[in-house]
Image 1 (tube, rainbow, N blue to C red):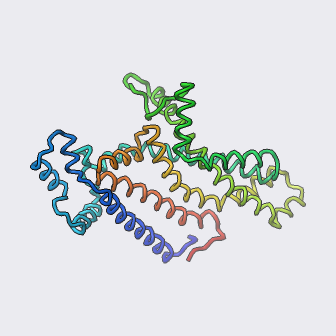
Image 2: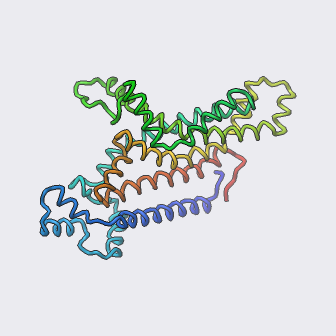
Image 3: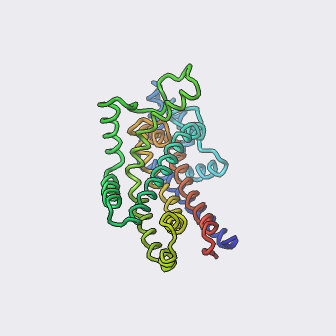
Length: 328
């Protein structure tokens, strides 16, 4: 083991503290929006009488306007794994709705992360190996051109060109409108076809950072003394590039892989809204519009826990990948 129990306890403690602070901010932010969710729920059902509003307010634990009381109740329920009941989808629990949306977001984020890193690392390695060549210049220019484009704008342009004008892909959603009678392969093909444009928008806007990081790491490794010695010994270029330079340059990039999940998740939220993709991002957006406090809190907390867990996992795995690192 390349790290001590003290380091492990410290990292886990910081992760739990971060989750607690995220949960506290998660409690405060929806309430700063204002509005009465009980009134909104009663109005949406056509039963907006004072008695109905009072009953819904009491049922959801909002009868006491004291935020301290609500905060204590929120933490107590959170410790017991209870994210509350959704106002908008009453009486469905928030956890049920989020678990239903989670696979779509996970598929979107993981696909975009893996593809963007594969493309970025490949272009970064080639660009560093042939520094100043056409792959280096063109790849870096195009990647940073897309990097400067906002997620939502690129997503809307992809929809307009490839879905509206050309009709090559669906304009939104994650599955065909009718899935009855479809074979498993037809269902998978439909899901992939609906996910191509959302994944593409995330890949195009997140590849540049991975490309630049890998390129810089490769340039540093290629200038090391042992690489000069390997060249002098007459090793083949393939071995020099992949067995030595690329393996050493990928180690710092692994940390970037984990840290990038936060940015990709943030972009996925916006992308899901543009494409009406039924993931956590779209559920959060709908919850904000309807003042659904429990849903907003549950969605943001789930995203925060995912990012913190990814960073903690990177801290724990890195010493195992690089035996030179010992963390105390």
